[in-house]
Image (cartoon, rainbow, N blue to C red; front, side, top):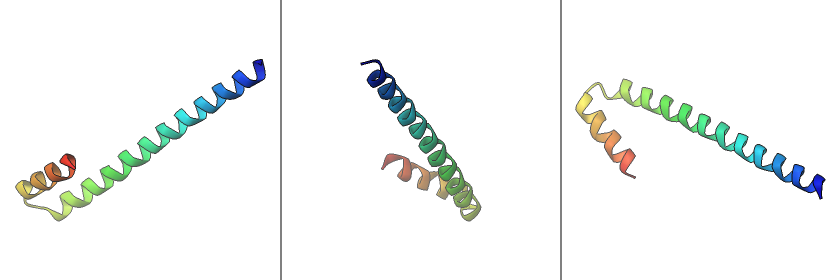
Length: 57
C-alpha cells in the first residue's frame, strides 16, 4: 500500500512541475509576442485595442 501512495504523490508532483513549466513557457511566449506587437504597432492606441481584443478572447 505504501509504495502505491508514494508513486501517486510522485505523479502529482510531476504533473505540478509540468504545469509550472508549461505556464512559464506560455508566459515567455506571450512576452515575446507582446514585444513583437509593440515593435510593430508604434501607434500605442492601436496596440491597446489589439491587446483588449486578445485578452477578451
